[in-house]
Length: 306
Image (cartoon, rainbow, N blue to C red; front, side, top):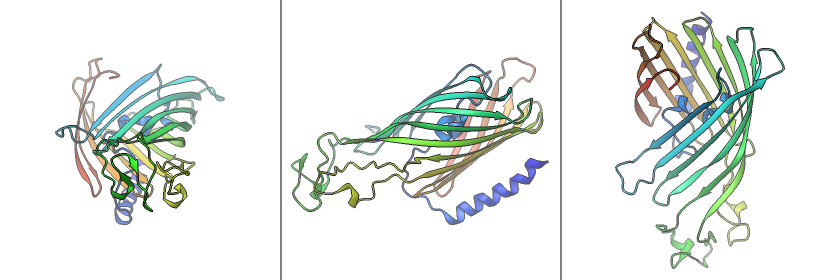
């Protein structure tokens, strides 16, 4: 089977990443359930299904025991196939996504709205193999609260800019916005009734936007600090192996490359409760691991399209 030939290459890829990369500070949210935030992972997922419309959401809570809880990330998305493409089996899709990642006592928030347009090229009449391309663009923002800020020489008397060489004129409501541009490609292939595969590659922040809080007119020039968001590359994939009418294995992986890198791998076990029922009830359990960072315990439930 052609798919089995890919698996050793993927394993070698994981070992390579584990050997050459390290994980330190993050510059994007860590979504454990990355397969459930498709458009945020890769804009080529926009409209990549047969149906009318798809709605989804994700709420990440990293420290719910803290008071106040300042580590939360809500995300929402909607997408749909729109109309037929150039080929008879091709189609064009679109989607929108929103997220707001908030972290730390300063409530440093990073998020915004992104819209995407995609083209899905069916490489056979039955759409068993589909190659998708997409572009995504929108406005992003960063802001933080100065209520609990203690920035030493940078500020005096709470919110009064200092006069020292490191003084920053960040103001009483620090925020900055920038235009973001992303692109992605996605390959989905159904080998037979029991086996299918999805592989994707996305480029985020193609314009390497500037996102510093420091003003060009302040005492410290934005050009003197490293304030450009680096290009971020994402490689991801998921597979599904139907072992029987009731059981299936669904491994998945996600790797991000930027100034810091991260790799997450997961293995889901799916159990269809009643194969003869039209309710499509399925229990999902699994384990995952974000290399050099965190273990994951996974639990889910599907019924029909929910």
